Length: 199
Image (cartoon, rainbow, N blue to C red; front, side, top):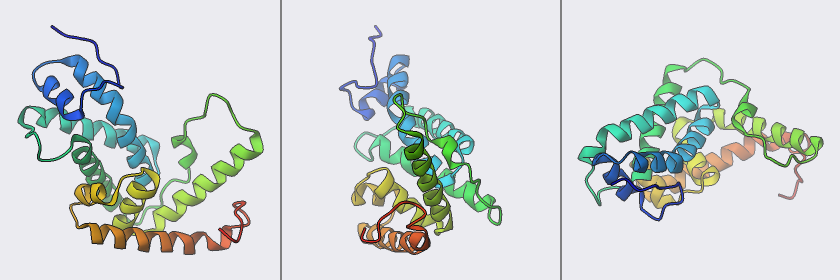
């Protein structure tokens, strides 16, 4: 018997994956609705290209479905495993395009809100998002990955350590160096970006 689920289901990711592995398609839909937006967000921030990010998110989810029957409960969180796969796929794409500039069109990765703020505020937000994406593109891959996961996606240092397969101290070092580099890259643009000099 198949019961309906929704993205806010009280079942854990692991339980939903196990249900999918046993043939429950509703569990797959719920897990997809729950995890795909997060994976897509990480990929979009790492790659700076919405289309490529969608490809990465789709590939990461396909890999999750493929390993579902062999999933070993308790070894890793489903979301951590998925972030790791997506991050690795992004890193592979970034390595392949070395020497090719990232697209400036970060704005296409930002969905418009239902209630739009004033045009001037939207323009300022778009300018800041573009500046951030350009600055992120200047960081080494591992620093960019750590900064995106920590400061833009809100993962904890231990979660990032699991995703990146490094120690917590290494995560702290990467995020600190990444933040300093971003600050230096954006320093001369504070007035343009509408940021105060005290913050």
